[in-house]
Length: 163
Length: 304
Image 1 (cartoon, rainbow over the protein chains, first blue to last red):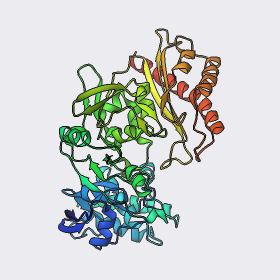
Image 2 (image 1 turned 60 degrees about the vertical axis):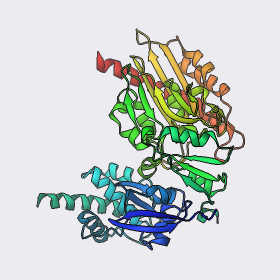
Image 3 (image 1 turned 180 degrees about the vertical axis):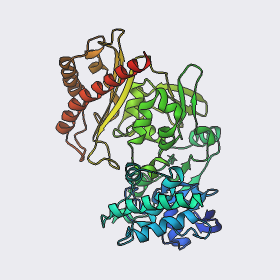
């Protein structure tokens, strides 16, 4: 079994051809083949949320997803170009201005989860925000600022919509 | 450090239809294939080398396995590849089958629910799976499809042992059918786990109750447990303690004691020892029945 396969993966709007193997997870292919190292690897079992990316707009744990199954889908990562994704830019700004980033390791996952949350629910209350983040651990324990950043992003995006 | 390991090597195939899937499984020998539904548990089993299949059969590309449909008779048909998030958000499920939406919502976080499937939660046949108990209390059946046809199995007869089902070689769980619950009935699923979310169930109790015409007793009651035995199971002897009887604290105490006798928690589980689980089972049984009872009463008041 040498298992070489070529995958066509649409990541952040760019189609990549990747030579890999069927047993590679999406996380491994993003980080090792495409060198998109913004998506982090931590627990490797779907507990911590650092590897969260969006597939067709839905947040998933890329450590539990086979790269081969991501073909034909829209994959979005923290590297998604902010020029074409104003929502991603606003969320990133809010995380910076609200001090929601300490060591930064959980941040890409938190931000992708936020994007998925705000796409479905533009005005979440604190409970809904905390529920959306249950699958994310911040070991600096900066959860208060993270919740504030998401609330701030929601307000900013709402103003954006008014202009 | 095992958690940083890569997955073992395997070939990958992705059938496009149930027919193609069944012709693949029909020719395979034991352990050669692994059916890969959502994969949220399968990836962990692969990473830990608990299974090392020659070939992984991805099911995400079979569109006919992903549906939720209300049937003319009021029952609900659910495809095996329906994600837990779809189950939680479906208006059809939230109506008469609200316990399934509530149970799905108690599993993992949204990242996991977007991928994990109802069929995977059932077919893995693990005692900690949360959806089999409420499905048992709703009298659900599952469809097993094979190359030579299909058959329906009541879900309380599906599990043959820890990680094992009665599915014959080559058979695949493709659909779940849930009959419309009776009027004046309600179901709940309560689970005990250490954190608020993202951890495994220590004990789960599903209870369905149907009130009698006076609203004083149980015309019917069904109880089922996660982690009360090596498989999810329906506690039929325990149900008899309450069926046809009136609601009272004494009756609840009696049913709790009966549940503690009928359950046989695993002795080799590191998560909790059997005595602890039995205590949880006794207490949660009372709480689940009381909660289902109150839900049924509230529903009766709302509709009258």
